Image (cartoon, rainbow, N blue to C red):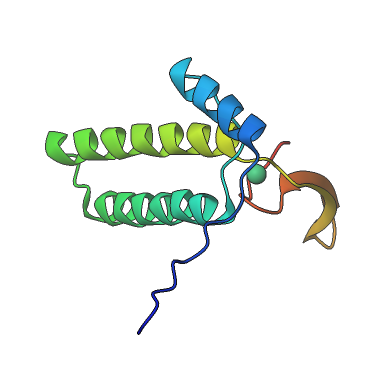
Length: 118
Ligand SMILES: [Zn+2]
């Protein structure tokens, strides 16, 4: 007789699930996005940016391109806002060299979603 193995679901904290349900019901951020979800938002942002840049290159000033670029900019801002509000950020303070003559600057960003907080 064969026995089927049912994959184990990761155990979730019932209290955490309740907080997420409440946040969704109240349409407010819950800050519990997992790594896969963060990567998904980042991928969407990458595609939106790539397609917007393609339109910018083709933009000859025609209204159809201007409108599409504006629409995609709106989608980028919305997606960045979702990412910023849903990620449980891991804050990193770093220093980047910009120019050997003018020095660099301190930056603060999230190592998971790469949102910059400067
Ligand atoms: Zn983050």
